[in-house]
Image (cartoon, rainbow over all chains, first blue to last red; front, side, top):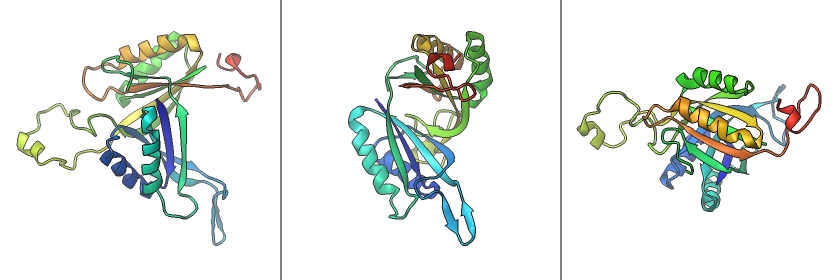
Length: 105
Length: 123
């Protein structure tokens, strides 16, 4: 199992979640976060924005689905400009469904 | 060291916090999040019956995402089972939407105040 954390533009989050839904990945969690990347925020005129609002989409999927999810997020969140976001993949050892106490996804 | 991530109902957070405190895990990180699971939104989370003709219209514009609380606790390896069992027991309501728990490996932890790392940083 892998946890995929995709940090994308807030306006792209709907496109990403709908894209994932079409591909059969319904389960996910969204968090509104603030962050910055390599460009150290953004400067518009004389105003410098240090941290920019982003949406973090968190999904735990089977190992074999990781590539597909990354492909969908990459395609749906793409604008070609700085600030499209990042995708992180980290290992998950176990998942538990609270209602039933079952292990596994 | 493991990170236990629990995504639970907002109204169960205080009960969960109390239980974790009794077990000796006072330190948690919480965030308000939106999410959905296998039921694709709020589907079965209402307490009244939905008319079948409304259901047959398909997506009736109901809530796509359900508000949840995201709790993260970092614990030592041997305590994972204890904490998972406690969270499961407290949060069970027998209805869909009780949440999920994920267990992820953590390589190291550092306490900022003292600079100590590893397991001593957790306690």
